[in-house]
Length: 217
Image 1 (tube, rainbow, N blue to C red):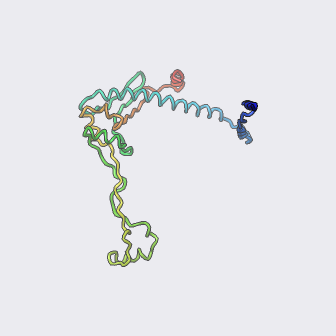
Image 2: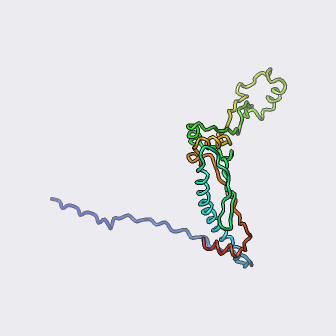
Image 3: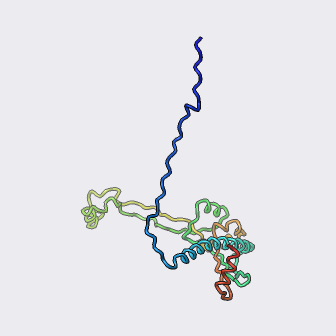
């Protein structure tokens, strides 16, 4: 009986892993020249970026409270108010969603289910246009100019129908109806936006302001 061949050593037959060489990072070979004030400028830019992030967070917290106040009202459009705290005050405003921000299809469906009126913003009206395929055919254009209806050989498809392109938008009537129906809390994020314009009642020294802001960072 033939002796069974010994199994190959798994370690000796293991495939070699190909390691892709790391791409050498581009070295900065540019000439370095000292510029006075650059470090201060860089620090201010860094501070500005951090303050923008902090501003967004604080604005979000303020608007969350504004939304809760606005949605307390039932059956009428809430009035704008003035927010206050310490040395600060702000005009707190509820506005309808801009017509430059068309409603999405699913938003339209949800509003229509509650019989909320919507507006339509027409980007391109329904109209007939001449087929641009013939825009450079000067001879044909001249014939058309002379006698459009009597011209022989006029292509059947020279005039095209361009359908209207429009979108649903929020109107004042939309916002009023939502409020009157007691549905502002339900549809708030679809139809409304908030604006807050804060200011300090008394002018404070920038050093005092920075001390307070530093506690928040």
